[in-house]
Amino acid sequence: MRFIEKLENIWERNNSLVCVGLDPDITKIPEHLKHSGNSLFEFNKAIIDATADLVCAYKPQIAYYSAYSAENELEMTIAYLKENYPKIPIILDAKRGDIGSTAEMYVKEAFDRYKVDAVTVNPYMGTDTLLPFLAKKDKGIIILCRTSNPGAIDIQDLFCQNDKLYQIVANKASKEWNKNSNVLLVVGATYPKELKEIRKIIGDIPLLVPGIGAQGGNIEQAVINGKTKNGTGMIINSSRGIIYAGKGIDFAAESRKATIDLRDEINNYR
Amino acid sequence: MRFIEKLENIWERNNSLVCVGLDPDITKIPEHLKHSGNSLFEFNKAIIDATADLVCAYKPQIAYYSAYSAENELEMTIAYLKENYPKIPIILDAKRGDIGSTAEMYVKEAFDRYKVDAVTVNPYMGTDTLLPFLAKKDKGIIILCRTSNPGAIDIQDLFCQNDKLYQIVANKASKEWNKNSNVLLVVGATYPKELKEIRKIIGDIPLLVPGIGAQGGNIEQAVINGKTKNGTGMIINSSRGIIYAGKGIDFAAESRKATIDLRDEINNYR
Image (tube, rainbow over all chains, first blue to last red; front, side, top):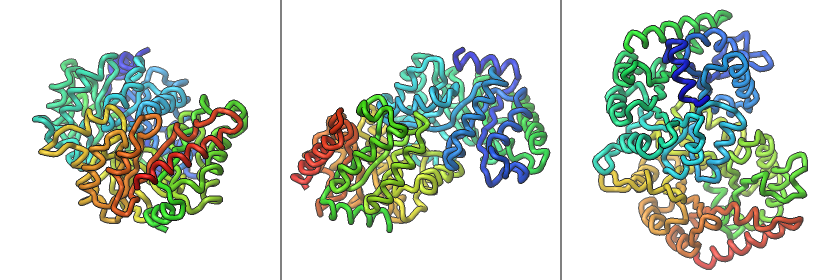
């Protein structure tokens, strides 16, 4: 099934726009898991089992695994999801970007090795570096547009030929890069005005929206400005706010509570 | 020793600006190595032993390893280099870029896990995403500026507030980001005019220059436009042109010849 259909189905089935970021930091996970053989996987598994009926996607950030030589735990996490919750899309947050021959290798990394449904990519190097990803019709190709961090203004907000750079990226994404209807954009919840502008440019293209929770984005404004007419069109990510909601034995139950609260708050404004 | 000193020393010691890109594609390496237990490492080792007196750096591209779950062979390659050729800087070509907390993980990946001397990074997400890298005073932080691929024009050449985006990146690199004197820029040999402009903006900041060989950049023009006054300032990368110079049993000897030719051609114009 195409990523985009899988996403539409789960939005409806779970009535949720929440994506849980599986970014397990070995220094922050509960004490009782730190000495397990596969701490990161065990942590993820507990979070997944506690939240799988409440989310529209899971998004592991690859750096949290590669920093600790824990690619195998990322693979275990993905395999666990695919076996037990096959209807939930998996987004690999990797923000890759390189020339064609290397981009082909990153395509292999995401879709042959990790077998995820979607991957994040960086547009700085231009169209030819995106093409090997965009050729994957059944996958989701999620292009950085206007990110959630303070430094987003440094490059993405430069005025270029009458538009800001992120507006140019949004335009290219909808008019040039989306021939296979498999493009999504990353737009941070921390900048609701920009979310609104981008939604106007791109029509119904779905957005991956980081920046709520630890980063301080306002949920009401993000949803009102970012949703499509049918009240979907967004994958709203929370990582730290959900996975570290509790610190003890009951951390997974705490993460469930945090996910319910976030889902419900988002649904208030859809 | 700081990366930049290591680089200056090896430029002089080996009288070479050549960097060999260790991007071993399992489908392209010689037949007799394809069935070895660690094909990519064995291939790299032979290339390294044949070229170590001729280069100023080695640059493994991480995607060629991660696509095939071969991080261990990247680690073996780096360990081999550090043990046998400790004076040669190692650049991890990874083009990472993400928000602060994730950038910290990518810093760990490059410098704690892989223990390389320098890493390539993508500036699209802005200054705060570069800071965790820039804080590593002894390392080389190599920021994408004007890349060698055709699509470089799509984003990097946009006119933004009177300058092209890559010129703005070059300006920020030299004026804001280089407080620890550890910044380098990626500028493709395929665009000699832009190389010249960037050299003018950045003074003596070293450049990592891809795009000769398979990508077609002109060596004479690249060296004349990119060098500093003392005839250095460049790390000129060749991957496919060197590592696939031969296909048979004698592939390493062929790669040595190709490296000598490239070194000598570059040195003609320094």
